[in-house]
Length: 206
Image (cartoon, rainbow, N blue to C red; front, side):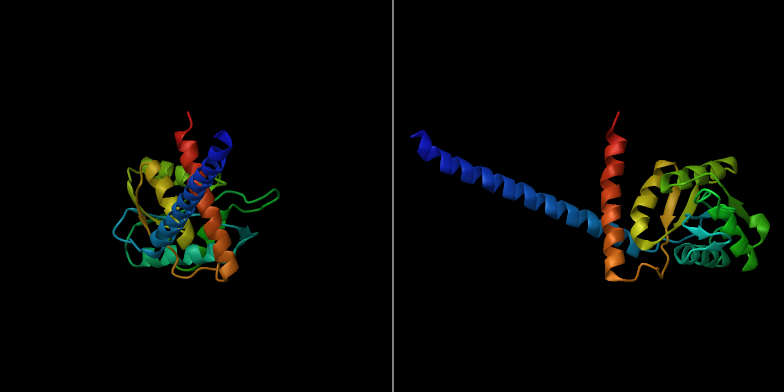
């Protein structure tokens, strides 16, 4: 009797595992779709500040990814959507002469942005720290509403972290991205899916 029950029990167990696996795949696909959808929306509207998230800089030059973010931030400022430009990003590595935000400020001034309309911080190394420092600069000036600028697939995480800092955040991703190949986009998307779950876990942890 027991030997006849085992095959049926084994099949039911396999069936349960298959369903759990399928649910897991559907969940991951849903998260990826949400990340892509959020990055595709442009919420840019009247705000008090435009926060440009940091990215790599090569000495005094922004990397192509960072340059796209800076250019988009400048464009939003020129449209009159916000009075302040906030550039974030600290020193990218040992021996770096300039912080990412300093490189961005210099680029913006060279492209016509008044120096007295730019705020920077030079200590952050991660997206969370970018937004913590930006929020601090905003609170010092009694600002609450900001447009957050980053790459499309980065936007969902950036907005969630910004709102966690008390910023009334609007997302406006770069209309162009340096992540153009299918491989680089998939790598970026998979990384953001990972960070989505890691950050959720960290938020739940005591």
